[in-house]
Amino acid sequence: MTGSMDIGTEVGHDIAHNPLSTRKRDTLMTLAERRCHKGLMEGRQNVLQRQPATRFGYSVLDIRVQERLRSATPDELDSWAERILDAATIDDIFTTSSTD
Image (cartoon, helix red, strand yellow):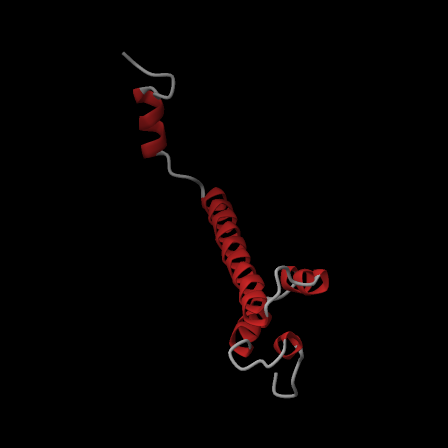
């Protein structure tokens, strides 16, 4: 008995023996890479929303800080994650120093 998700032998054979064109393969990889990158960025942003809130006793970060996190580059997020270790105030995390 076959289920509704089963594919025919002929279709399976075609998939196995007719690999994706280079263009289609590259497009799929690009989509997968973008999705992975987006997930990593969201993870960094989530951590950077929790850390300062916990460290400085906020229940929710200021909307300006949240927006800054959403629009940040990966390098900015990494820099801010390192700064939280020594920051005396939440502003110290996000202030650009002359060494950046």
